[in-house]
Length: 179
Image 1 (cartoon, one colour):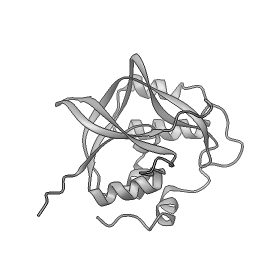
Image 2 (cartoon, rainbow, N blue to C red; image 1 turned 90 degrees about the vertical axis):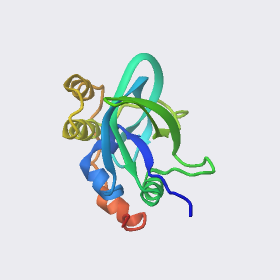
Image 3 (spheres, one colour; image 1 turned 30 degrees about the vertical axis):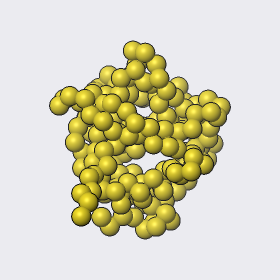
């Protein structure tokens, strides 16, 4: 019988929000606060849910993105992939991106969701930035990093957002993960 190991993911940006975690991967176990060194947040395209640019990471010497390192079952990871638009054939909006994350216990190998960044740069909506900052505060990310999130260039949303809640998105994607 094969041993099935949990998936190790680095979650950043809006994926840090406890509402999103509870809806998409309620069995995820937080292992550490992590720092993805030599990357920065960038925003592209249009996130229909939040009416503005959607976050990803781009390489940049000296920059850092903070988040959490979590483990989850393969089944939960597959469900979260579906919610996030990951397609193994490369046609999805996101793809798995392997990274090395610095945490208190050393350097951890993980994967993160990376947006196909070939689209046009775009400002995120102000409510989206507030949602990301709330998640960062919830998990106790460094105060300077949270302040940088709050200060991100953003724009007002043109309609009430989010357009649908994460519990509803998870239900539409298959009803959540009973892992």
